[in-house]
Image (spheres, rainbow, N blue to C red):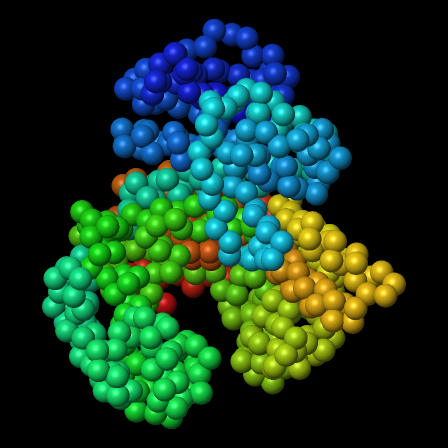
Length: 564
């Protein structure tokens, strides 16, 4: 793909647990014509065989990083680069830049069934946060054949290098996800236990409520005059609230907070602590934070935009209240970096909007918007910018949109164009080449029916509403998806540079626009510099020379709770 030789890895049908390795030059023709003798390696011997070949710095090609890499890591073997055929297949099959090629037009096959799939039932459209995990393939995949097809489609679509960059970044992300789970985030269970005990009371026996929750449940029951009320049962709680005269449609926190009733405060406190117990309580700690490490299950490209998801452990929803338990080992530090206003900066770079880029030369882009005289204060700047990206149609964001459009016409035009495309039922594509899913057949059929003569007014209104919803989805897709691409390139470049430092500093956490590195004390400040340099390089890789600055807040700390 970039002149680097490949090593193809496939399951050995003759040796359960074993692998077949083939050395191949990095061209479609070489892969298609591979006929050399394969090396068959028994499962226990695979780590040594990989370590031996890794000295020549090849690109490993396998069906699924998650299938092969964890066992190599457990044996102490790490690879520099790989090509994940499963993840790359999804990108290429869906990208509008590959439209019209034989690869894009062929019927679904084993690689599609093995890949994350966008479910689009008639009644619901995919959100930006849909989890797209899927079962493992039943048959051993054809690694040489699939790699050859992927290389050929890159040639056929006339790729300018951006799709290749996306495939490399996506595959690097899969390596990083496996490495972060293997290494784990430093976590002090005793600190977390002390926090839970302080907030909830001592750890209860299985099936019992902690003392503080039990006391609050009693207060809620007394306030509603319902002895024995179970506040964990939403139907039971809703009936009790209505019987007490409260005008509520649900038990949501926002509705409870709006009530003037003695139940409000104990119920709000109960819901907050019950959420902590459920999401990050003792059971969570026993399952996910063992042996001094928190090891969640990351799902690279688990969201349609390319953002990551989590299939266990809740790494992408780690609340601020428990971050004090994330502590560096003795002699180590945590380097925590957060990209400031990443999505607006990405929008400025994509659109080439020089005025917005100028605002982004401030460490705080929103302050730059205020200084330019676009809006009156930072809060308005934030509302306006997020409204543009997410398609706000009401409230402060909608009111401020005309001012934003006058100040940053190219940026606003880009997201408006994406929204209109979505409303027409068209796909939109990120900077590097990931495309949005198509609307469902039912969506398209309803749209066509609503445009026909004699369509019922209520059907027309409903179709227009759904079109606007889809337009908001595609408006954000191009920005959020490109921001995810920037983050992948940032992590991949950071990982590459960390490998060159002594003491093995390593990535241990990632959250959309935030990374954390666990580093020996004597290189921690150097890591902080590298984190910033990697952000600059990620911007250059995606956008070439650009006036947009990708500002970071970087902290070198002992505990995550102390990060800026």
